[in-house]
Length: 338
Image (cartoon, rainbow, N blue to C red):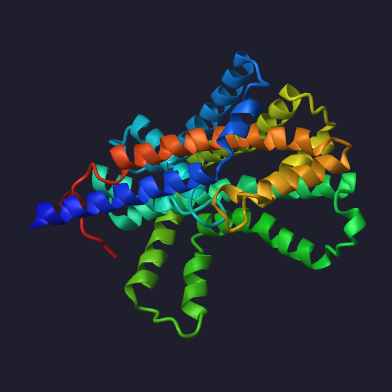
């Protein structure tokens, strides 16, 4: 009975992943993507793919640095496959490029017997350090947008947006400082919110996970700084990736214009659409049009970006099936300890 249930679960996961990949490929303009990619030389394609491989190596190093602080038995390379799987699931599903993070928790819990709370704590720290740099990049990108006047003609008012932006920028470092000083804002917020059962299992689970994340900050400041350094490298790499692609397609931009174009594309990926489908294209046509480039040039850029992401995302879905979702036995995991 148990084997039949496991087989049904595996088949359901396989069907779901296959449907995600089929839907994405059906919507993607594969012929146009191929035509755009053919504008590049082989060495340029190799540089773009190598740089993106470097992103995942760095992102995995950040997560692995956090995990290894308390769990020396966890190897690096299997986690690299998990990180690519996370991108694949996040890219092909609705939402602002998140959603695959449960794979990280399941991989640690099922393969290496961490409790759910310990595994969640490592992912919480990983995302917090990722947001630390992402929101800093957001500030730089929005500064570039305002500096080059991309949205000036629309007469948008940024007063309220700047307040929200300031909150986003300062939240990750403030959260880290509070964790280091044994203060737990997420747990405190849950405790104060009305209509929430303070002793419910999910609330206790999140509070314990946050405390474990805080223990990492307190006990391993050197690893914390190293993980922050990996985040900074990844953030700088995103800009470099965009700069290289525009340069390879003969779209020559100043630093601030390049940063504004990257930022508009990054914002489009936060839309509740798989891979920002349609929003990414619109953002680049609009922004590069402001800088005097034709819609054809902008679409060529987005098609190259689409080809890169579909390739990596498709690989991620395959890895999710082959090793991330069905390769472990749930009964090997430890019980949830709160």
